Length: 254
Image (cartoon, rainbow, N blue to C red; front, side, top):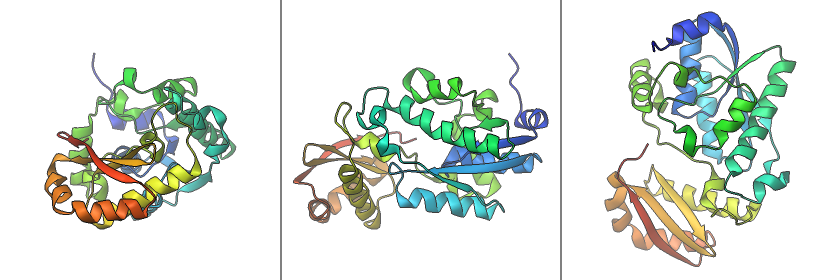
C-alpha cells in the first residue's frame, strides 16, 4: 500500500488544530504543517503531569516558528479515573487532554484535530491511542509512515532544536500502576529529576516504590551515574526520598 505524503495530507487538510507537547514529534509536525502552507493552531495542555521544562520547550519551539500556542490549563488531579492509576490510566488521561483540545479547537473554528503519534508507536502498547481514535484525532506522521528515527533526521535538517531531545513520558508514569497519584508524589518526582538534570543528566527517570527512588538512565550516561552517585543520593534525599537505587540502564533510548 502506498503511503500518503505529508504534503498531500496538508493539501487535503488545510486548516488544522494540533495537540502540541513540544516533543520531537509534535514539534516536527508543527514545522511540517507550516512548511506545507497549512493554517495550524497549536494547543498545549498544561497539567500537574508536565514538568515546567516541557512547557518552556514547547513555547520556545513554537515561537521560533512564529507561532504562539494556546495554553489550556487542565486540573487532571480532579479526575478520579486518572489518579486511581489503573493499567489504562493513559487512556483516561489522553481522553481528557484531547477532549479539552477538541472543545477549544471547535470553538475556535477548527474541525480537524491532529497529533504527533508516529509510525514507531505500538498501538497495542499504548492505551492512549484508543482515546485518539474515539475522538477522531488524526495522526499524519503515522499515516505517512514516518518513524521516530526519520522524524529526528528531518528535524535536524530543519534546524529544530528538538531533533535530539530525549523521549519523555509524563510524571504520572513514575508511579506504579494501582498506586494513587497525588500532587505530593508529582512534586517530589519533578524536584528530583530537575536536580539530576542540573547535575548533567539529559535522559533519566526517577521512579518510586514507597519512599525509595529507583533511577533509570540511558546507556550513554551510565558513567555519569556512577561518578556522581554520592551527590545523587544526597539530592534525592533532599527531594524527600528515603533511599536511592539504580533500577535500569536503557540501551536504546527513544
